[in-house]
View 1: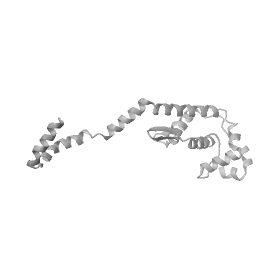
View 2 (view 1 turned 135 degrees about the horizontal axis):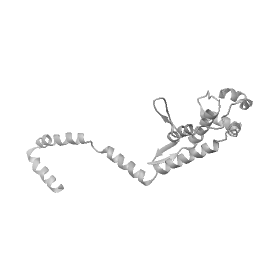
View 3 (view 1 turned 120 degrees about the horizontal axis):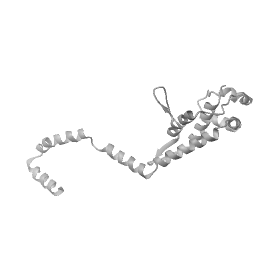
View 4 (view 1 turned 180 degrees about the horizontal axis):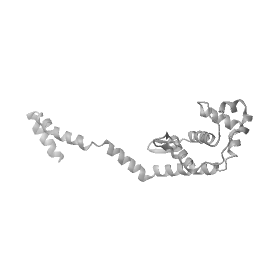
Length: 180
């Protein structure tokens, strides 16, 4: 059934087919996404968690709308024929249609709890001191020159030294001696 049909006649909500259960593998895909040769779909974690000032945060508005969209899309035969998920969310909530559907889904509380626990675990790990330190070390290592670029630099040193004017060579030698 199309979303636009329900929007024109909310009574059609009673004709919507609702699944009461989703397999655990599908719940895992909802949370973590799918990334294989057949499909690449973002999960709730990559969609709703943002990195800001080196810390991970949940965008709760996006999480709420995403959970709504996934619940309606995966548990029912409703097809969204709109570009605005926010408008669809508002329509379902204002007209109490989401609650009607949710009351028919026996494992919705389990799915919500699983989503919340996975997100909490993700944040706990990513915002832990050890992970933040490791991430900082990785960033520092990325900025270090590669072995190849260091080798090129060391090969250029003799030609660079040969370009130094003889009168400046003594000053250069003194500078090196003081640094060492």
